[in-house]
Every structure is written in structure tokens, then in C-alpha cells.
Image (cartoon, rainbow, N blue to C red; front, side, top):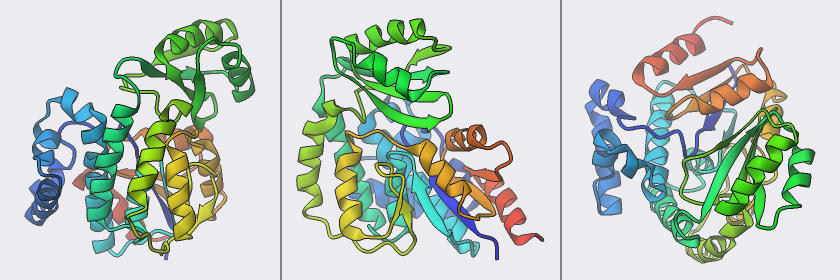
Amino acid sequence: MKKVGFIFPGQGSQRVGMGQSFIDSNSNNQQLFQQADDLLGFSLSEIMLEGPEEKLTKTSYAQPALLLVSTLIYRELLDAGIRPTVLAGHSLGEYSALVAAGVLSFEEALILVHQRGKLMEEAYPDGDGGMAAVLGLDQATIESKLSTLSELVDIANLNCPGQIVISGEKSGIEQAINSLKEAGAKRVIPLNVSGPFHSRLMKPAAERFEQILENLEFSEASTAIYSNVTAEKTTNAAQLKELLVKQLYSPVKFHEIIEQLLNDDLDALVEVGSGKVLTGLVKKVSRRATVFSVQDDSSLQTFIDWYQGGE
């Protein structure tokens, strides 16, 4: 039996039409889309399948949409007899991992991430915060330069070698872009996001989110999950709940998670959900890594064929 780790993408991987091929190939999948619409009280499926893209990109829609697609694909993998040895997710993707590990039900997680998205949108005035990807500069240099700015900017994502995302006040991001370029960054690219996610500016949202989580009972994880906050595995329900609060304002340590996964004696890593963002990050850490992106029925079959094939 091959050992595989499932990794779930986060916000930014959404695209109009995601999940369509699974409905076309299996009409039963439409039921999950309908269930999501009923739970949320609006047509998430219409936004996902028809757009417009500007609406799907909105945090409160993108987050449940990505959870829905990842859960659907995960269930397809289970139906094919494929179960993961370990789980991880990038930011929002951690909620897909929680569903896969039985910590939360799909229904609980869907409503939760919709609420999370709204809190993130409300935490900081739209347009006053921002994020940018810094390419070709090390963490220590970035931290040093950010500490000299007059406005708050934090490291938000440690994605892979040479790719670090910063987050904070929009004017601070503009200052940081110039400062980091002067320090030797190859490129500093402003990201098309609506807020300063994974920065200290998200602490008001985290406080409100913690109150919501108090009403939810978490189960022990059936499969170990790597936390974005610690880059360590855990199955503990209380710890997973606590870390979800911290995740809102803490940097995502995905580079460390990838390195841990590559040391876990796995036969492959599998990106379960829309896009190939995480597949690209894994390859930047190790070109020799075996990694699959399962985002439609065709790529699903390719992975199943490999999994069921010989060593």
C-alpha cells in the first residue's frame, strides 16, 4: 500500500468553473453543491460555476467554495480506496484537512469558513490593507527591513525558498516594496487581496472568531494534521481549535510543513483541490518530490492509475 500525504490549497486557488467536471462525470456530486447552497442560504454553486470572478474572489465566497471543492475531491479519493497517511492545508486549506480528519463535519466547516471570511473582510477597511509576494530575499533581511517601516507590515506566508509574502497596512506595503527592492529582492508583487491577512491587523477578527469556535465541539483527528502556526503534526482537538485562532494573525509556515512532509517517508504528496499552487511550492523545495495535483476528473484518474499501479 502506497503512503500519500494530502495537501489542501487556500485562498487564491479559486477559479470560476472549479468542480464542474465532477458534476459532469457523476451527477451525485450535484447533491453536495446543493447541500452547500441550502446550508449557506445563497447559491454558492452558481457563483462557483458561473461567476463572475470578482464575486468568487470575495473572501466570504472563496473560502466556502474552496472547502466545497476540496471536500468533494477528497470523497472521490476515499471512494477509490485511497486514504492519506498525513494531512496539511495552506491557510484556508487547513479547514479542508480538518474535515478530512473528522475533526469537523463538512456542514460545520462550511458555515465556519463563511463566517471566518466575513470576519476577515470586516476586520480592516477594504482597500486599506494589502499583501505582496517578495521573491529572492531571505526571511532575516525582510524582517529587518519591515522593522524600520513607519507602518505595520508583517511576514504572512513562508511559502518556499525565495518566496515570502508580507501583509499589513496598504501604505506600509508600498513603503516595503521600495525598501525590499533596494535590499536586493528580485521582485515584490502586490497581491489582489482585500485585506492584510495573517498579520497582527487580523487580531480583532481572531477575537470574534474565537467566540464562534467556543460553540463548536472539535473531535480528535483520525489522521495527523500539520498546523500552519507550528509546522508540527497534531491530532489533539483542543490544540487544533486554539491554533485556528492564532492562524488568523500568524505567518503560515508552509515551507517548513513541506520539508516535514518530505521527511515523512511518503510515496507522494497530493494537492486536493483547485489549482496547482501547492504543487509548485513543493517542487521549489524539492524537484525530486513526487507530487500530484488532483483538481478535475482527468487528473483524479491519473493519480488513481499511479496509486493502483506497481511500485
